[in-house]
Length: 92
Image (cartoon, rainbow, N blue to C red; front, side, top):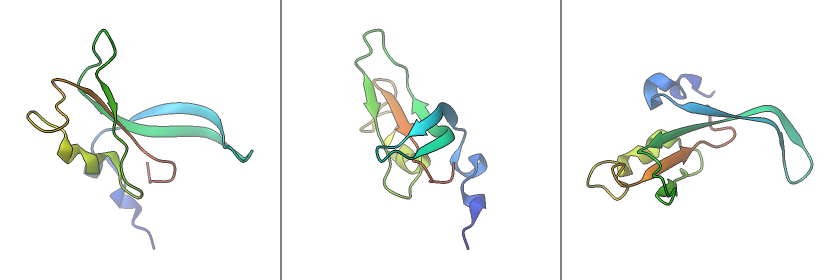
């Protein structure tokens, strides 16, 4: 049995959600009312050249990748706009 209480914002922090509408897969199937959870850190600069897309591993969550983000860490939100996308079916 899967513990769905694990995938909560109380445990993983607040997420934002991108409404994808009807999402069409390559093989022709579609997912109605698709949404993608994500988190961001930092600010996008005027040139829009400081963006980093940092997906997590299979079965992970954006929260699992936040340990790499922080002042003086490899992904410093004072320098970069870091996007942590979720995955379809990861619980959010």
